[in-house]
Image 1 (tube, rainbow, N blue to C red):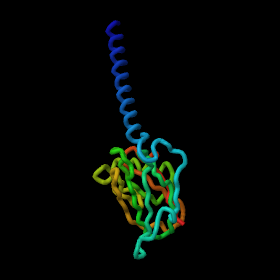
Image 2 (image 1 turned 45 degrees about the vertical axis):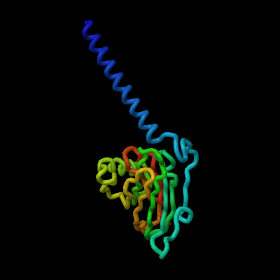
Image 3 (image 1 turned 120 degrees about the vertical axis):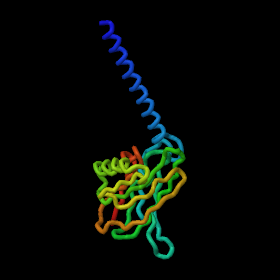
Image 4 (image 1 turned 90 degrees about the horizontal axis):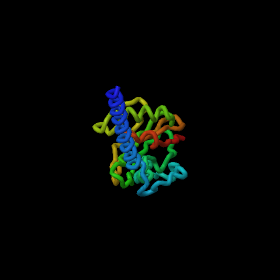
Length: 189
């Protein structure tokens, strides 16, 4: 009987230590990925949205219209949560990673689907499956275009043609763990 109690006690302590270690790891992940420092710090009050006229401009020579978006400091959020562009138009999407934390690597995956949580989740999880060798961009029917992963201080871009149908289309960061909070809406007019 005493042996049973020792086993139960040992089992309990082992489980407790695993939970404690997992809790410490989760705490580190939260502070590393969503922590407070840098531009935009810990304040998440008010989402920033910009229309195409505010966030973009014509490139010289009449080329693609340019839309530039950024992360919100060292948080797993986009600073620009929506932008507006005309239908069936060539767009250069520029992502300037202004984050300072090394863990804040991001991409922008534009979708040809409405901005719904189920689609963000499906594409985000498929991005993790695609892996680093594919820039966490899945071969998925909902993906319209995507930038490469950018480390803090890097700028990446992608040129694509907007959908011909007006409406709202989602965009998301598919770097592991980011899809749940790093989302936005492309409004096609």
